Amino acid sequence: MKKVVTHMDAENLHYFEKAPVAKAVAHFAVPMMLGTSMSVVYSILNAYFLGTLGDTAMLTALALTLPLFAAIMALGNLIGIGSGAFISRLLGEKKYDDVKHVSSFAFYTSLVLGLSCSRLRH
Image (tube, rainbow, N blue to C red; front, side, top):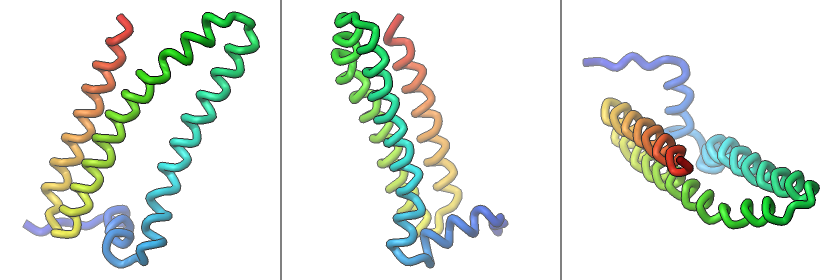
């Protein structure tokens, strides 16, 4: 069975196979850094606006939930980084069907964990 490579697949494979390491790392790291930066900006703005309300109980509640938020982020990083490393190895071995299975597993596991974490507050 021959795999048909689309333009997007070919572009991504270029970064994994032929691009210089520095360029490939920059290509994949910049979106991750932007996502992390948005999370930090959200936390800072959230603390600022709650602080302007003058109710210390709200600001304390925000500070007390930070470890829970960090644990949920750690679970997301566990799935994202772990599956990303595994997918990179599979791409290097040119096992494209296995890549689809691993990425599907990572997506659905993230979805289930996200729904489970959203049920924590009820």
